[in-house]
Length: 106
Picture (tube, rainbow, N blue to C red):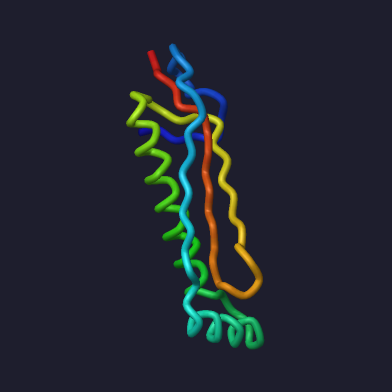
């Protein structure tokens, strides 16, 4: 499944627009990872735990998007937009959502 942020696929013609599809992933962030991330912020460096959580959430949301697109017979999803959001201030939940337009290609 081709996933792109552009409104088309170079060299391919869109023959049908099948509608908007979306994928979401909500993940909890580990308390110990938060603690070590805070220490990294103080001493400098990258917060590897957070980066891993973000990557996993992005991959899960994208897999959800692909599943939705396949279910309606799409060949690709164009015009994709990826968003990250922290849910609440104290619950440690992260939401990643991706949406776009499912299309058939010629």
